[in-house]
Length: 157
Image 1: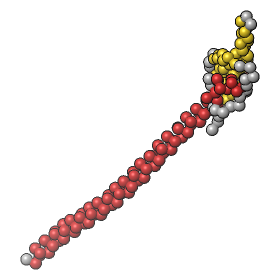
Image 2 (image 1 turned 30 degrees about the horizontal axis):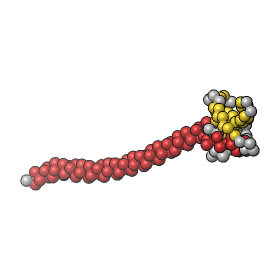
Image 3 (image 1 turned 120 degrees about the vertical axis):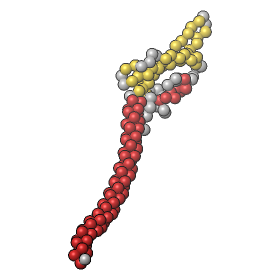
Image 4 (image 1 turned 45 degrees about the horizontal axis):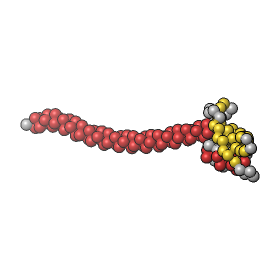
């Protein structure tokens, strides 16, 4: 009987040790997989954060480029203005009127026709001040000096 115990021991010992080795190896593999999953999820979260930062940066750059392009476009717009005094003589009545003409340019290309206004004036009136108050594009000129032949439409900011 002693030989049967030794044979059973030789058969059972490798089976038990293989089962034990399998369990320990599978536990270790699960632990390594869990660590790699955690590291991968951290990397994905960091990558997602970088992607959102990049998207915000891209939006900011696009808005800045659009703003700069618009500012450059508006800087190229200007108003040409001219005015003169017209006299109407009907019998013995002399009437004077200020004729103000304006047009908008893009660089050196006119983009509008002459806009003409005729305003009756009294003797001794300040023609430059009157021309500035009647100007159609004066609101767009943003504080340009009166009497200038060419005014910038928008100031560079």
